[in-house]
Length: 506
Ligand SMILES: [Fe+2]
Image 1 (cartoon, rainbow, N blue to C red):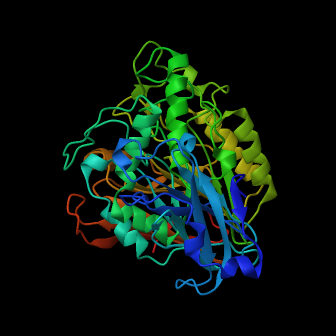
Image 2: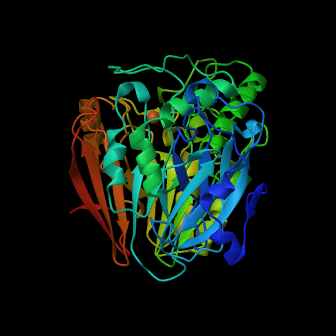
């Protein structure tokens, strides 16, 4: 339970009309629920409900320092005739008047509907779903990443909201701090954020999009961040754009804070200064565990780039191969290994930021993308050794970041393509962000035999249906990212059979 939330218990409280919960609040002159509502972090008995009061969203929110009481209720039906819990939370200025209600005591494996009230306003209705407590009931999720606002409309989310899903997993680049792209249909209108207020306004710009709000309202989400929530290609306390680690950590603190304020995350994920623990594991009965990782906050600095400005493609060097290099940091890596040892389901889904497979991107001599796993081979080896050593059932790695669809076999020994496949890997394309050159991917496909599929020219998302005997993956592609009314189609389908790592076309 949110420390500032109060549950009104018992039948008498539930009989109170919802209007009573908001009687104390202000009379808003503009809609305070302009950024929508959301739910996330589903367990077998609850989830986190989120909203943020922002009647003037692009200018700091539009509220003064006064705390605002926000009523919430959750029901077994969309008409709210069977309300199961109701309460209030304090939205405070220090948290951008966001609320994060941590529910418990719900029934496993079922849909619920929720809404908020503040002052004279009532929010739209959201739908959420708890995880199964046991058994192998199928789980259907959508994988999303990379939604540069200037490069297209968020139409993919309108289609996603209509899918039959239990969950959305977002693996980062929810906002972009900078402007870029071959073609811009609209502009951020403000520059790269440097303060908490500016990061809040950037989230407000993105979260104002109706299609994104629809996908949040339709399903619970699990979220992690990548680099653009803070600064392009940052690693730990180092930004390519700031020489001084201390000033970068102040920026990171503001960016992390704004991320938490705008996501359906619990109090435990609220940053303390420039640190925040957002990784975790989520169980869905005996069917699956979804492990969500943070590969930005704790990682080693880019290899082989001393004195240069940022990461990129570079030839091999001794530093790249150093066993000291880490992607997750020692604490998270230890936690992950313990979690893998528990073998918590038929499927162990590892949701992280970017393409994990070894990928030689060089034309003649080998070359690696140092901001991706290419810069952290020893850390990848430790993870794959852990998966193999613990005999994890059906490990499935999900990623984003590269703005293209990929299917790969993660090999026990990345240098030998005939080495055993340890895990299946699926990488989803971007919601809007520009993809790489298709001819470049064709070349990488030809050169890297453990890569089974790579497609750069389409935007969209990926659905994954986990069942008792197989996982079914569909790459969903919108027709045209600059058309707000664009259609969607299946681009490709893959299947992973229980007990046989590696996805195959279906
Ligand atoms: Fe991205």
